[in-house]
Image (cartoon, rainbow, N blue to C red):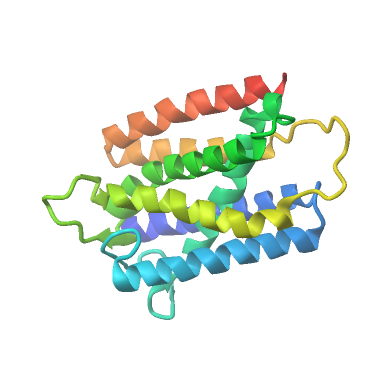
Length: 235
């Protein structure tokens, strides 16, 4: 229990630091009220969907939250969970924009940006589930043994994670558009730094728990994504 409490405390502190850095970074290019509104909207929508998921098993699959991650909202949802969605969605969107920067004037840029953001959030969730659910029991999956899963999480969870991200982005994106774009604005590397840092922390966390499959997956996906974002942002 002490190990779980220690991991949970570190996890929450990292989340708070990442959230503060994410929001501060966005205020450099967007009005503060837009940033706060977008973050609040993402937190509300994700929290609502997660509560429905914990109560009904739809759309992510059967699971329930424990108190290992902190006090529960409405006795169903640990308060840090919506913060995870805010951090992951906003920084995945920033990384996707860096990767797609050479094609930012293409007519399909918006659609590709949405798709890549969803893919990056799923990549993060694939790295998070082994550490958070399987090792530390922040939430517990009740996946039947005959259903294929990734460290206990059914594969429908990751499909639903992508669809949920797409839905949230469709609603929150208007708040994230710079109405007064600066010509030839320099690339913003802060989302890449935050996203890569969190993925590397999960790599270390999974390795510490001897979850080698998750460790290899996280490291082998973080490196090419980071390299691609860095390379394309300079074009």
